[in-house]
Picture 1 (tube, rainbow, N blue to C red):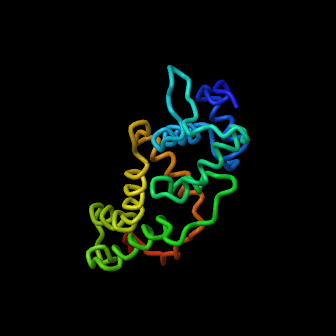
Picture 2: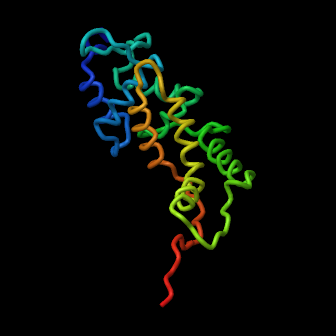
Picture 3: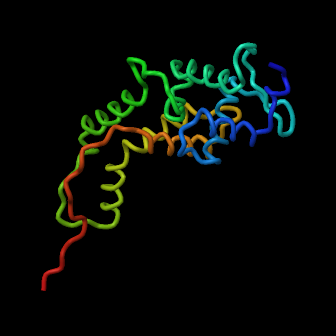
Length: 191
């Protein structure tokens, strides 16, 4: 394999990843954010204005696609590469202590253990009380987003790109939450 095939433009890397390695529902912007994250992980390296090259040592028996796929599957087992399994077309089996499940259960336990976060019954809900109640209901989601984006941020990955990857990961998660019982937030007028 020669270096010419290992050095490409960002759009060429995105097309290669989308065609062979990533799941089909990854859009161009999410794939571009993932390329920045791969740069932070040491898979890709910027080598010019628009040239990016593959950094692992080349294996002459593998094509560029096979080499990238092998590298990404190996990174799935690391703490830094925890998010890659949601993007790969054929991810490796999950490791025993998978990060997302721990974080989801940790956020659920935070809500259950804090009495201020539990729903409190009131007879008169002002706008401020409605906002506070809504905030308590989405607090675990906000904490999950914050922990994911902090892990995805890097020198090349901006907060906007980390949030784009988090939204994609969230859409791919299989775990469903229990439905909440319906609660009326506004008072009914009596005639």
